Image (cartoon, rainbow, N blue to C red; front, top):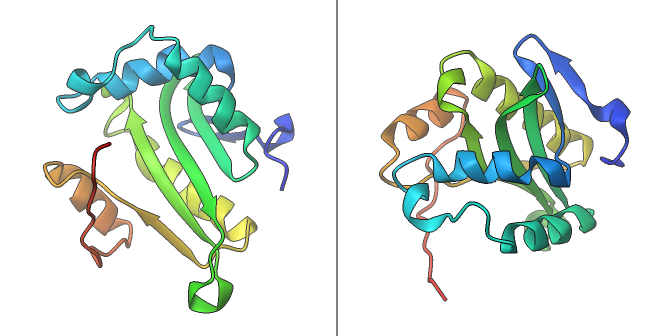
Length: 160
């Protein structure tokens, strides 16, 4: 599926979901920085974000999404479509960097976004949707479990 076409914009009762464009980067980074974890690792205004956006946008296996209402970006997430050999060559969708603007939380927007992401994974013939959430984000973990995600693995990271 070609995610660059505007007809893939989906109007919902909580906002419009669409592929992000470069002018959305500042709003996206602002949401990434607007929490206790992001405030120490994100640096709004750094030109590295535009370079990263260009790389994401050029990759057909990446979809950076925003939700907007009345022209304002109110949420974001990144979907990575990952081909693999395990499980009989199964592809999977990785959901990353899910953020809902603080004043929009509790509106149903997050749930609508995740359900929309799952449908995009089905369209791409993925057989698994996976995500990680920081171990300190108890509310996020409960949210994802309520949507059917199971804490089946232990994630590990190595900072380089």
